[in-house]
Image (cartoon, rainbow, N blue to C red; front, side):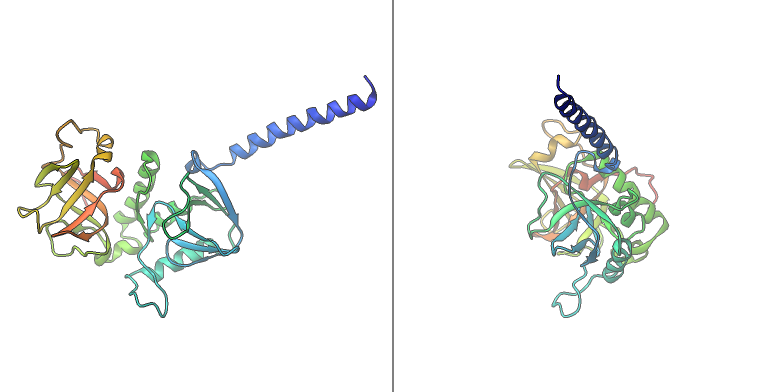
Length: 275
């Protein structure tokens, strides 16, 4: 074997070792929350558009996955800002100003308006969504079926709720009763109540919270979500009589209604739970 051949083999061996080592280091640097997601970009400069959207230096917009901040539209908009909307935007700006950000996306990384939907890690590995929820600057809003991630984010939100931090200090943004008069169509809300009846019709389940299903609050659950309810059998989700909490956009369909997109939007509450 000539010296040249030996040198080439040593170079190839060294490159393979470096590649394996580098790959292991990179894998080790992936934050725990991002496992199962794919890196989809970085940024050294970002500006908050609202409490849950960013504009990065290349002009792209990033929507923060799994959270919903109070709406902020900015000066000159025909739409009205929600209470705490401007404050939520400022809190996000304070966290991302001059910060190195790494984005992690799922397979479907774009939303309907073209934003990249991402979970975001700060330089120290902190989970941006988790920080915002813990501070009370946003709601948890599941958009994918990831039970472990949902539980972590829901727990962060619960800490803020228990301390009445941020938006939870405002009655207008807190949990409302399914039987009360605070339901607002066109708003994202968290609604709590006891399920009076459960009906199944044409592949959908309807949870009714009043005697008049055509006027009282209703939750509609499509058939594709049945498998996520562990108590479900062939005829019922066994939610009648349960006290539940649901979150989502309230719409009007003969009465106020939330249509579930993900099972994690609904949780069954302990009757003795304090709120």
